[in-house]
Amino acid sequence: MIENSVTKQQEVIIKMVLDAWHLKVSQFDKLLVELSDEQLLKEVAPGRNRGIYLLGHLTTLADSIFPLLGFEKQAPHLWKPFVQTSDKDSADVLTVAELRQEWIKVTTMLWEKIAAISSNEWFERHSAISEEDFLKEPHRNKLNIVLSRVSHVDYHLGQIQFLKAR
Amino acid sequence: MIENSVTKQQEVIIKMVLDAWHLKVSQFDKLLVELSDEQLLKEVAPGRNRGIYLLGHLTTLADSIFPLLGFEKQAPHLWKPFVQTSDKDSADVLTVAELRQEWIKVTTMLWEKIAAISSNEWFERHSAISEEDFLKEPHRNKLNIVLSRVSHVDYHLGQIQFLKAR
Image (cartoon, rainbow over all chains, first blue to last red; front, side, top):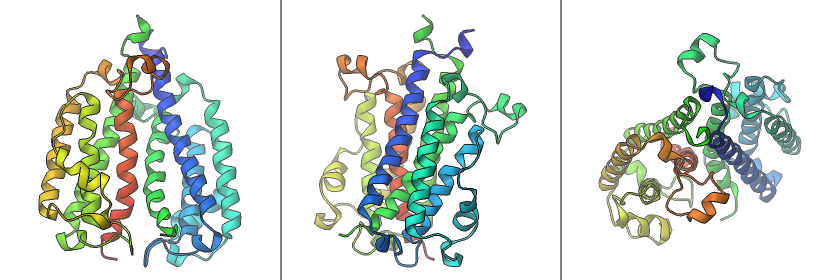
């Protein structure tokens, strides 16, 4: 069963993707330490999303990884205000301080869950694709979820860092 | 030699990473069509890099992938003005129109080279790591170069899209 065995190279690949996720989360952690609550209440650029909104957005997008890997969301109440509602239409349902805690809670728990996933399991289908479709599209596996989310974090990191003083 | 053979799952992983690269390049291509030369000459946010600088920056960063994979750079003249020099200190050595062409040239050629790399080769060391270090850190392979650059493109994509009209 060579085709289904986990080789050393696959272990390497899993490490590459999980390291990349961990690095991005750490970079955002560091940025959050550098930014005050006041700074996070500002728009990242004129007329664009505020830092607080992007913090909530990234938290709920990280949270949305749980069900795709077969776990329960940790912060389901954030989906509506930070994905379904735009920043300009949102009432501030949480303070910056609360959202900082939610980010830590979600990413810490996610890392615990991720670290416990076996090498073979990373190549199994994620929960949003049917068995039938997965046979045709085997790249739609659990590891690919993490891979695509790394890039999404970076997209908004590039924006939020505009809040830092020049 | 199970450990060195390329399994179906590894092929899947390579597809995941190369698809991710291709997707990001396509997204930037699309954004470039939407933005006029005039818009690209503006700062993405007050006091931040201009679109033209980020276009040159992303082009030369894509170009810097070539030597890591064992090929020659296509636009080595862009490294100094768009990596070693900050936007505020840079003289505009190329026009937006010229940079648009450089981006297309570099990414098209890169895609041709990438598509011809064999599955096993993706897991070989890239040129910036010694054989000795690679034995200890096998994740520093050619595929990891592309993986990390995907995220870097997204970082700046999130900024450049601020140039679009609201």
